[in-house]
Figure 1 (cartoon, rainbow, N blue to C red):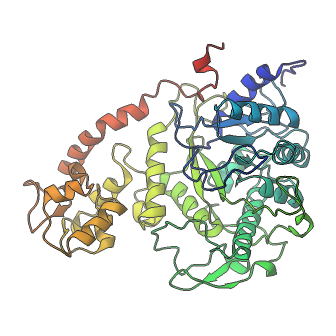
Figure 2 (cartoon, rainbow, N blue to C red):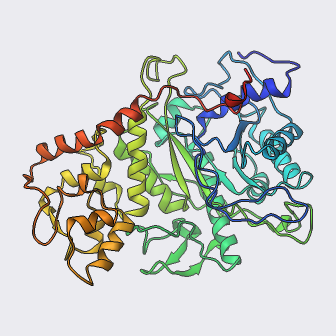
Figure 3 (tube, rainbow, N blue to C red):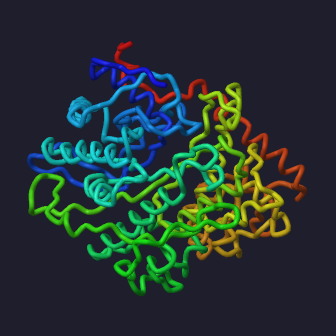
Length: 509
């Protein structure tokens, strides 16, 4: 059972609920540009939010708090589970607003990340969170960035309201398979998580189309596997042609009764849960004015998966990630290395080190899925289900495909150049442009941003390698492991795993 905390001050609540929020990952750019206005407080910039991080990689430019750490659920991995004896606190909606405004005025923060345990039931909790957002946007005229984590199981009306007040919505998947969710979070189900995720995705797409924009959130994808596929799969999707152009919108025809699907491994595949009904909210305004119609979740939707609490391989995690991107057009999938905090036979022992390097590799692999055209089945397989954590995933992939290397940068296609370790999208484009006007050399490649300490094992320039190097997996692996050694050490020797306190630099104990 938990310890009730009566008569706590706002600062005491803040210490409890800011610390409890550190397990929710929110380190991302805002993804939305919104200018300030007369009578409003703050604005939102797409390049903002993610310029300041704690040692564990979490953003501190957001006031990141829980509304409450009371919870009726008993998820085995969670510090706030109902069976844990921990100090408990709850903010009122007014307290959340006052904290946000006062911290913003002092230039401590740029926005708010609001999450919560489940107090009484999902609907009651979501009502209180929406009340806080409505006060913040209306009474307090706050125009800054807001990211809200919704509560699975809450009503569609509350989910719609949250999307109209917040810039970004997250519905946390928590674990990558249905079996793991049943084992470690018995009060939750895939259906209760995937259904709102699908509705938010389809509502964002419908709202963007109504504004004359592309329905697809991720504009900078270089992915091949998404093109020509069905976005938000099934009847709830948007048909696309091979050029990724929208052909026909079926969003309004979606059945509200379809449920989520999983494959034989329990990995999410698709959901056709329809769109949220915003017709009764056309007069709902973030500023209290009936003349302004708020865009629904303009910074998109994200989710989070815990790494290391259950036994899934990297291959399973990437498969789930890819299907989430394909089916629900997520802005980001976040990974959170599990920090052992509960003693439980179903979880790693308390002396297990958090898998920080594995988390780092999964973020790098996620980047390859989103911007480099890789697919999960290319990066890993059932025979090779986990990354070599001593190497970045791109190097790991290249070493398993030495039969296609080295490639000649003077003649290779853009797609092949992009797959060379040490060459990113910008440097690949520079190579393509520069070679039209003359021959390349290794000095010019370095000036273009190519990381030659990785790339030189996999390329030739003018028919010559940079050094006489044997194209042999074990040899190159040893060399690249040495190159990555400093970075790997820095990732695995993080001294602390807590969120940086807002009071650390101000002498407040």
